[in-house]
Image (cartoon, rainbow over all chains, first blue to last red; front, side, top):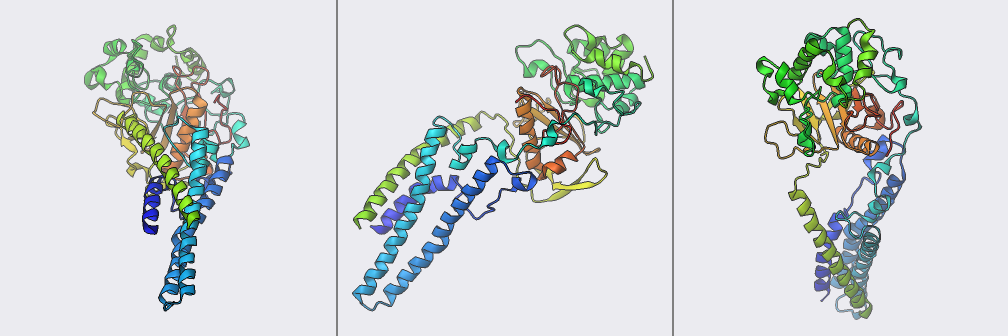
Length: 297
Length: 178
């Protein structure tokens, strides 16, 4: 009877307990706290971890020892009814203790799951239900609210002293020198002059964040007709007019080198009109104006 | 003994209820995964590597290039995508057409380029930060020392486009609407 109850209860509790990380052997303090100032979620997680560790210790270490002790009492009882009764009492109390420990945890967890997220498809432990957002694991640092600091600006052709990049006006930053898809140096290597390279680097930042794999716009926005693709978001019809050689097929629009090459041809043919046209890019014109003064057309 | 039976009975009832919820939850989860939404999970990779920082030093990180969540750009050699990535004409079941953000890594220059592709960009930036921090296994302080940019294209948010927004927890970061 006793084993049957333990087996049934254990079988039913196992899936839930497994989901909730019991048995739990640490670490009690989440790894994320070592990377930042602990927030509300971190505190709740630590409390939950302590509870899970105590339950684990009770089941994995304390219960086996007490059951072994009861077994020892039974073996050494030699028919003594008092010793046998005591041994049975120890076993019974151990089993009841385990059940109460798991049941209490399960009751709290189940009730909070129903109260907090009755229709949520992703259950969590009670602790994750309380904070609800892993972003709360860290406190927001005061430094994040300071004025934009241009530590990443190593611009070819101009000095990043704040005068040329108009950061306070929130416009006109160039792709990083480390971004080979649109850095001024990369653009100069395909034929842009210094001013054009800076202007086009600035345009690439606003068009695609300097990511060459940006797919044709209408593949990510099926309701749109725009085929704008790649680092400079060149449309298929524009591409077909300017592309040549190995880059001639529009399927190369996600190729960083082809996108730079086609952009260079377009600028040499018709200036920046592919980007400064009405409803094209709200910041392209200011990019061109901003970098005109730095040595070029 | 009577007390024991009552407690055991209550436990079994609770267990049955919990099991029902768990099974219901399991069904929903399997439906979601079959839709292949491409949600990236930063796996733990035991091997370590080092990345150059803006302070002319290096910082130890997980060997994220060996992480299953990292994919090579099939078109641009030396470019990698950490987590979300788009389709580039090559069959790729893990690609998604509508990623909330893209984390691109250029191995030649050890540069991380993060593009926020959905609103609210403040929330998306935090998601990208959390993913990258877990993927690299580094602290916020180390994150701020990476050679990186966080920006948003004009067609996603014209107000904040064209500037390095920074990681939210780094000095000088631009505060964004959540």
